[in-house]
Image (tube, rainbow, N blue to C red; front, side, top):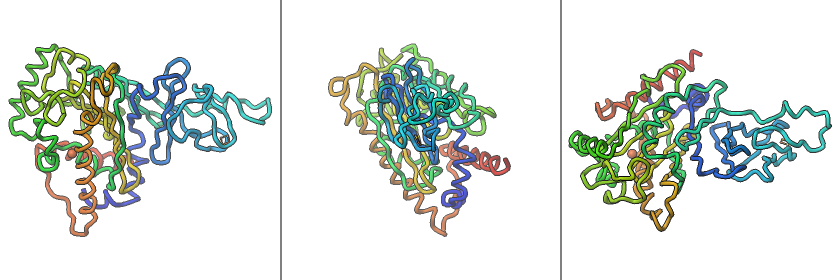
Length: 387
Ligand code: FES
Ligand code: FE
């Protein structure tokens, strides 16, 4: 795309408020807030949400904005003291169902029932917690079906977070995403990834046949769907999934040498299919499934030239660190690969800032998803402008 789409603060503002804010975001996994009163805070541009486990065990989302004078209530993750979320400014106290429980020194006649926290839409699918800041959220039905068909085979609902980290890219969110959806760069930029993944091997077709035969023998039938970019139904969240083979018969997972890293998950209890499943929700969230671990990725724009990537590693719920898996080995591949992505995307940002930059042709079909992403974005932006 022309440089202005990566550099202009005005377009960035339209991106956030006209294009991105209505989409669902994956906040975390349920294992991050296992107990009643546990909460996490998710910040998105000017908005902030509290996602809390309520007394009945349900997970609820609220705008992190006090109904007194508007202070942010929770700064980061924590536990509701005595079951209350307490505003640090004047100590109004909210229950974990969002209702206002106590308002210090206010008259007894105060109608507290009108002063609860504003609720936000939350969906929990396969253990992942999704949140929307929209007044009328996009339908999550396609995503729910897709995640159940893909992540469900690996039982992400019964998984737990082994590790999570965030990486800051000094680049516009579109450059981060354009890079993330194609594997044209995998060969030159990700040697560690390319050793064990079949995407850039040239013999992907043969490897895919092997993957499918192994999956069938295991009784694993993963349905993939494509409701993404131009194929998304109007009013529905974008949803996409795909399957890719690993690079060889003995390559079980994304590790240094393809050897297993953690206890096998879900339907893969009996063995590996030497494949990988990927699912997308919206444009900013994608989920990679291997037979023994998962990796969830979320991009969050921070400014016109800063984007945060949050990565969450998931293992089977009963796996024990140090006994069943080594954390350094488990996280090695995607730390190395995400670090390389940071470097190439930042160099890309510097390049498109030059007056000599003009957009070049895509390599098709391998950059097809980047082309689709650009087409989808430009059409979403023009709709936002004319709305
Ligand atoms: Fe929260 Fe006053 S702003 S109690
Ligand atoms: Fe990459």
